[in-house]
Length: 570
Image (cartoon, rainbow, N blue to C red; front, side, top):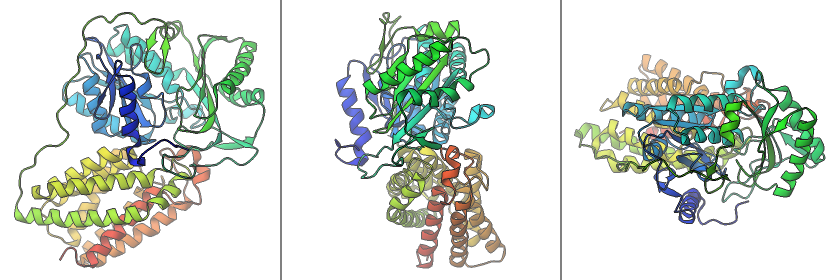
């Protein structure tokens, strides 16, 4: 567990501040993460990596020559927001474009994708290479669905080396894709990790067992097997890795034996010994291997093995020099020219005053947001517990962080009317919560505000707003009923509201009936297996437990209907 902290909510920010103070000659703090202190050379591609915190040295520790130009650092195990990714990329880039690279997780894809769109709209060429190395998370014929674990480091190193050589964005993107396509990883957990401030780990492994196929966000493995010797564990990990290889794999490979947090270096050396003996016996030549902590998971007791099957080009790039706070290889050549960083404008913008009617509507929206805030705080622990069955257990924390930010933004902007207030609330929710739910709830508030600005408070208005939110969530996240997401609760909620509007039902009764439908649908998700997101690789462990996102949505709709019934819309 984490013992050195002040407030759990300040853990990431204070850790980054300390990291930058320690390495002020190498990195500089920006709003959302860190960049190289002296920037990158003019005309050099900026490789920007990132994700949730809790994985050091990933991501801030690999910012430096031969590696990344910047790192976006979200909350613990939570994807950073689109705003954070945009601001770090803006600060890191020097005119040759940006390559984002990060693990293939839904929240990261949503937020980094939005940042990429914003950069492109401003004339900055931005591309993305997702890391998909974890063979436990999807079969070989669905490799694009795999998540990124320790293979993150491999792709970052290859892309960073190419950028340092002065290659174009096309070439840096190409070789990063080649590296990802030739990287495979598999891990094992002996015990779960614990969030800062929490008393219990996200999961436990039964005595005498170990969990194969772990994730790096506190997700347990996909199967438990009896504990064994290091040599036997090497077999457990290498047999699947050697059966899942890229076409024309070759006989030269990089090996990474990665510690997840509490497995010590001497233990990793013993595991590497067994791995090296097996690969050598298989005729594989190992090139510049690594054993240590490269992509961790807080204090998780676990390890992983990564294989990068080399081409001559990849081998040349892998052996290039690199120099960052957490990783050094060879001697980095002097920079080719001066660098620069873009100074960013403030996050917030002044909003004009609106009509009295629209300000009144914004006041109502604020009261409903406060109702949602109360219920989310009251159920935060429950939501985290539900999420931990097949996820990382942070849903309650993320939702409370998001709604708190949304309420604060709504208070500050209610004079600007309903649409502007909900837009500001949505931006704040997405910014502070990060993660998939942060992106989706932020987008939903935007959609509701756009659909309802100064509209009368009727059942028809509520149905229109709910439909707008549903359409935006589906368009952004891609979920459909049956995927075991918040959409499973939102669809019946919208349909019940639309039916009530068609029959001229009073708003209070319509909202109550719709909330009941959402609550029943959320409970019914316990029978479903997840088909999207981090929970998908752990589908069997999820069955029997409701979806956390659907549950939180049902709680919010119930809080809204109760508030309306008590006269908040009078």
